[in-house]
Amino acid sequence: MDNEIVTINLSREFKNNKKVIKALNNINIEIPKSVTAALVGPNGAGKTTLIKILSTLMLPTSGTAYVHGFDIIKEANNVRSSIGLATGGERTFYFRLTGYENLVFFASLYGLSLKEAKSRSKELLDIVGLSDFADYPYMKYSLGMQRRLALARALINDPPILLLDEPTLGIDPISAREFRRLIKMISSKKTILLTSHYMGEIEELSDIIFLIKDGRIILKGTSQELKDRIGKIVEAIIPVTQISDKISKFVVGIRGNRAYLRLPKTLIDQIDGNSEIIGETDPTLEDVYAAIIGSGPIDKGSRVKPVRFGRWQA
Ligand SMILES: Nc1ncnc2c1ncn2[C@@H]1O[C@H](COP(=O)(O)OP(=O)(O)O)[C@@H](O)[C@H]1O
Ligand SMILES: [Mg+2]
Image 1 (cartoon, rainbow, N blue to C red):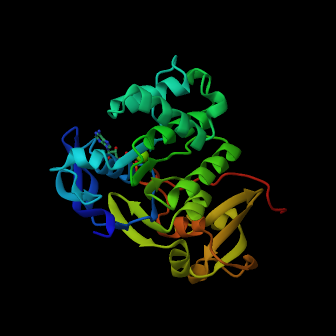
Image 2: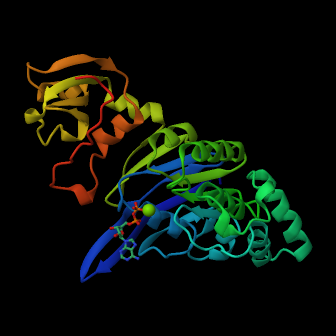
Image 3: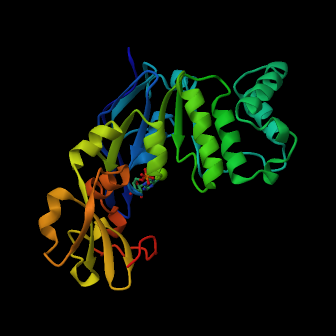
């Protein structure tokens, strides 16, 4: 099988106070070998649920998935030995142990002998650039170092597939850049499914992007394919009083009583003749996100309040 990850009508429901939430609603995706794919969508879209199901930490309500050719329900053990998982928000390392000791511990859980676990851990620390910090206790690690250690752990068994849920969450820009370089270095030999809210990161790393919202894949494609769907972006300045619900998600800044807009050209009739048109540009992935995803379910019904900033001169 050429596809390393395949989901078939994959669905997952949760019951919250008798209300049923469809966290995943008939997900059908295919990720070919050696491809880096990204799941992009608002909070609550179902990204983590999908990653958890693919890593066998959670069962689907219906449908199934194949990971490295193995059924996630019937062959969970085989799936587990084919994947490495790292998530941004995890707290699963031992704080008092050093980075090295942590890796040796987890490597021994994978059934490596102590000798193998030690040499593998050294090798992994080298790969993720933490050799100099091997003997620091985990609690002294910066967030960026913690994320790199999480990646090292995901690589212990040299799995063909990596599942990375917000791997750069909360780390500073330079550490994130180093982390991306690391992922790129690894990615030629691995199939990767990652989630992130950073559009630059998605663009840099992924061969294919799945836009997910309310538990459904609403669009997929390469970054360029998604941009081509949006067409040109018109940059315009309009009075804040003219921000309608339809265009509020395209407001990227407000200065005084004027709003700066990046609006798909197809929606140009949504702004009136008093608008000042600055020019036309190609869309960024963030423009695609605004146009197709818009705001998340949490923001539904309420006007998105744009951030005030002064990048452009009024
Ligand atoms: N264990 C759970 N119990 C109840 N509801 C959950 C649980 N996990 C996730 N959900 C709900 O499922 C939906 C998808 O969540 P999640 O997969 O975490 O989204 P994302 O990772 O895209 O932010 C949300 O509405 C969330 O509240
Ligand atoms: Mg999540």
